[in-house]
Structure formats: C-alpha cells, structure tokens
Image (cartoon, rainbow, N blue to C red; front, side):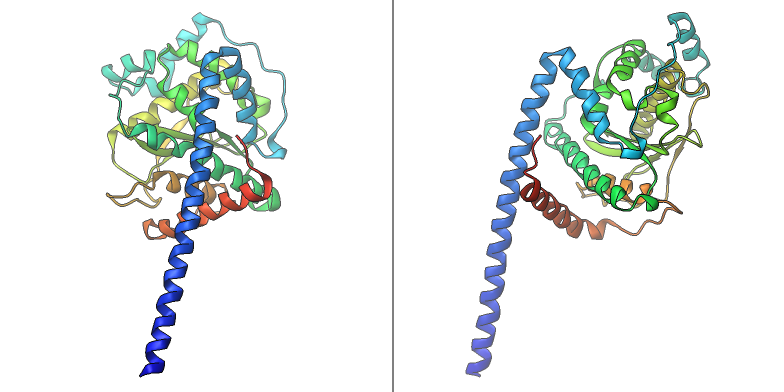
Length: 319
C-alpha cells in the first residue's frame, strides 16, 4: 500500500510540474504575442499618418503572400476611362443581382455596422492569419509539386478596403496601387488561386478566386448568414470592377458558397484558425478533402502557438 501511495504521489507531482511548465509556456507565448500586436499597432499608426507610406508598405505586404514562382511584374494595360468604368457598373452581373438597398451600399461600399467593442480584439486575429499563411508558404516552397501557386493579400489590408468609406472608383484605384502583384493580366496568369480573408461582424471568413475557372468561392465556418454572404458578394463585386479596370478580365466572377467545409460550434471563437486550415487544405493540389473539425481546434491552437514560438526563437521574428 505504501508503495502504491508513493507511486501515486509521484504521478501527481509529475502532472503538477507539467501543468506549471504549460502555464509558463503559455505566459511566454502571450507575452510574445502581445509584443507582436503592439508592434502591429504602431506600424498601422505610421501607415495611417502617411498615404505614401500606406501605398509603399502595401506593395511590400502583398508581395509577401506570393510564392517565388508566382512573383514578377509585367506592364499593366492602360486603365479604362471613367465613362467606360460607369458602364462596367451597369453591366456587372453581380451588381445586377443586388436589391436596391445593396446597390446603394455598392456605390460607396462602406462598412456601416455599429462599432463592436470586441472587434479590436478579434481583428488582431487577422495578423495571426497572416502569420499562418507565412508558415504555409514554407510548406509550399519545400514541396512545390504538392501545392497550387497562391497569392495572399494580408488580412488587415483587405479589411481596410472593406471598411474604408470611398466610392468604388477611388477604392479600385487604391487597390491598383496597393496590390502590385495582381494588377495586370500577366501577374494574374502566373497564379492559380487568390486568397482574401474577410472580416465581417467580428468574424473571419475566406474568399478564394480560382483564376483559371474565373470562379470565387466563399468558405465560411458559419454558414447560412445573409450578412456574411452579402459581404462576400460585395467583395467579389469590387474584384470584378478591379479586374475590369486593370484589363485583366471582362466577365464577372462566378460566386459560389461552399457548404462542405467544416463548421465551428456556436460557442467557438476559432474562426481565424478555421481560415488558416481552409487555406492549408485548399492550397493543396487534387480534390479538396476536409480532414479536421471543431474538435481538432484545441490541438491546432497549441500547434500554432508552438510554430510561432519556434519560428520567433529561430529567426527573431519582427514586424
């Protein structure tokens, strides 16, 4: 009996030590993550104070999301004039499907939702999604034959286009300046998939453009929401106008809403992790196979934390 008691005591001590170690690692991870977010906040403040800085930084940020094979530049065709652009708005297939209220919103494409006090916390997750794609790029470079050539636009840059109150012509011009890696047909023809992460009502969801098929697919871990579907439609409408303005494609993208991707539970706040897993799955060549669920998210969160800590330690990650 004494031996059994000693053995059980030893087991309890080991469990307690493991828990203490886990807490120390989590605290260290939290400190590092807070530091990253503070740097990001400072960086965004600097971008906001200078329009020129925003445009130059955006060029650098968009280049980060493209594999070496997809990088490069080509001469952009002459943009259409304002009159021709107005015709695009009239003939755009997506605009034609919007109701009157949505058409009025399309003219400005402004985020009119009330400020959510939790949005500032959730929007930080966009930076985590950016980091997640960076890890994915390493996998692509190590096994190029297994992955599509993908271009990724940083989450906070996409959100700035989503939320900026400006007429569509102004927004398209800013996109042309800020997205140099997809501002001409030559650039677009080099890639297979374009990834855009949308932030709507405190929720992250993914929109993927298949360049060859001229198809946009919305992947959302919360399905059936008209608000999220409308946000995807507005973004595709903006992309249609952008592609037309840059002389990339005349026909509007076909928009479909995927209903097969995994769902997050009603009490889950793992939408950013779902977006990362969506990109990892979709970027692989072959048939799309969803091999994860909400039940896997705690493990995935821990793995992601370890990846960040390992990467930061090995390469002194800086913003």
